[in-house]
Image (cartoon, rainbow, N blue to C red):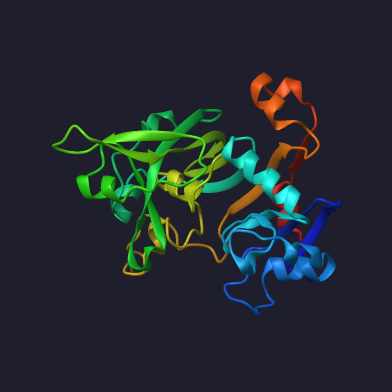
Length: 296
């Protein structure tokens, strides 16, 4: 059974779904097992697009290897630049679905987190929560990230990232000085869909993304994703079975990239930005359920 499935294509872009365990793009030239390589067999023009890295071609919406869900590829340079402009303006909106455990002490177990951004009593069915922070690399090999806020330590605030083209900026006070640190701020909106004992079903959405943003923000709220190998306490390699206050992670992370939307290439972004969404009804929108993703 193929690990990648094309669900839509046109002259400008391709939308595909990948299984968990598959890299979105090759880690180095010559690899043939990535989602990009699979899609390029039918749409070789995506390899001619100049993206962020040479090996990534027209890959736009990437997801982690352990995440299953939607990917977006540009078929030409004009569309790639269009989506980059949409991203900078906060018009490329993304949706995710996660099955989580309620573990209030999760940030303390993992370490490196600032104080929790929510009251745990807020985690009720139909609750709508928005979490915002800057980010910094964390851990061996900088393979993880941690949120950074005004309540973070001096070292953490110094390491907060500024990413070119993000739609929102903020400032953190630099301890002991009047000078402020400019950082990129990323917000994630969470809707608690269902609460079953300690099993929480969450919908997440964002318009400006950072590596591991949703996974890290959920862990910060005490809602680590089931099966997450690095943001779930049971995934900590130094812990032995039975030591963690929760189950051993499942073989597959319960996290899915379920949707995204963006203005069509033929719309006037300048008009769109000045008049709002009603000025341009031409918006591409794609949505898929976790069940459909799992059936691939």
